[in-house]
Length: 444
Image (cartoon, rainbow, N blue to C red; front, side):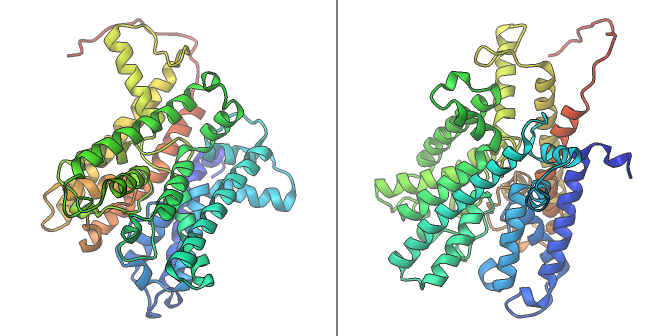
């Protein structure tokens, strides 16, 4: 066991698994369901995995199936999964003991993708501050809107605001309404606050910290920060234009809206599309040309070391720069007058190809195990589960236990897989004292 846990990164999947199993046990209790009955194991496991992996996908109607205790458990699991099990544990140690040992520092760095020892205490405090302040602001805005605009009692408005604020910042996607957030599609207060929380949580702490230090001089940002921030902006523009064009005249989605409401609804859905999981547009009613766009954006996901999933924005755009350099015959891959290390290129390629293989295998397994599933819906559900997005075209609720287990495994692997793989590759990098003769195989 000592040899296995010699690298702290190996504790990441174990930590998430322990949280999932603990959440499953709590959600199975009669006190967690609205009918005060025992919840089936597969339903509790699916929900706990979805919460810890900040996916938001559900096989039951969240607001009617779970009672207050069950919803509180989902909120706690989402918060723990968003910030990271190991980061949360280190925060507790920091508060209680007022100090962190070398082992606990390494645990935090394995979870946050910060590999230099540096000021871990400051890192943890900034992570906690960003999360708590963002969630507090979103809670107040949503609670105030529900209280003043929809006549919710103050206590209920505060609870609804807090629940959705945690889900928004952590890119969870669970909602206390049967139609997700469709009823608020044209409410600017709700739309903009949820979109802002999702974007902040999905950028990633390293990018936020780096950009905040030199926000007046973007040229001084690191390569990862540039790829994440500018890449996220590019994906937001592409997603907005593409979804707006595809759904402009769709009578089942935004067709009946005025132009201002169309812009607001599509802009909000675009912001939460890659990892947020909320539905401001009915996913099952989209035109078919919208699905390829959604699949691509979900697969890319959000920023590194964030609450988002997917292969990550920096990975996707780094591969784009690699292809551009190859097409131009450049000997090096450069981003913003910085040469990208070959190890980073190999890491990006490894994560991307393994992710493609997992999505393909998951889709094949779902089609094989589920009945009457032969169209794009299987690929959509699998991509949404693996990228921890949580959007659904209605297939998840109709699956039997084998299909649910496939999506459960994908949500877990999608949350810890790329993180663990990237961290393991970085931590295990070694230098050889010799090199073999070079040969160039034919690639065509």
